[in-house]
Image (cartoon, rainbow, N blue to C red):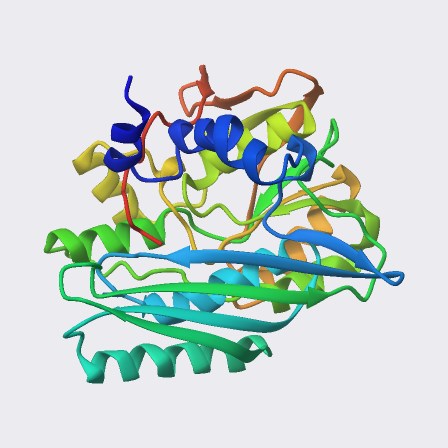
Length: 336
């Protein structure tokens, strides 16, 4: 199969993306082992630890119910730093703007970025702007990078899941991906579905008060909850069992997914965190989540059942079991 055609024909977030990372991108650029592949790199210099991350945003449409590409870019980078337990400090912004893009819309996007940064307590410290000819981009693309610091010695990453860990999520799944898709396709819905786009660093700071009981933090963005937990299972070499009846899911999201044949477990989120934690701390963490504005619909959705295997399975509402794998493609391209 022609890999050039594959690169042109698919989005990221599924099995193909992971094949590209495994077979080409990571071996060529850095050789980082599976255990070291997290939402942000944790680095050391002169005895101090800091975190660094970068991401690019190509969401279509750039304005969607509950947000726009600007706030999404800032919140996404803040969240990637928070997922390794770092306190976000500064971010950079790179704008690639298509000739003819509305100045008014650009101003709105930039305002959203500044407001999101202020809410998260980070500074926009550097940036770059490029304007490309009409037809050479799709309105606007944004790259953001971020640096965070550590005020603790905890080691939180995707390779730390342990047998017995409980799996928590801070709220309903699939909201962002369905909100973007509904806007893109012009769906007329009886109920408004809004993106869950939000910065999670303040919530994470509260959860980190549980200390070493927290083993893994991960935001289930591209590929959704299913792909994210499959990545963690492989990274930690554990097996995971989920409880379908426990998934927090809005009725409107469930209805759209059923109508379009989508599995909400694979739909992207932009304001959710998966927490894998010691079982004795699970109820305390759940209560902390529920007391926070971004965690009112929090739930315990599963557990790490065994060491080894890298498997994820779901106990269905009818009592059966089904396996969870990464998608071969992507359910909803360009949702972030």
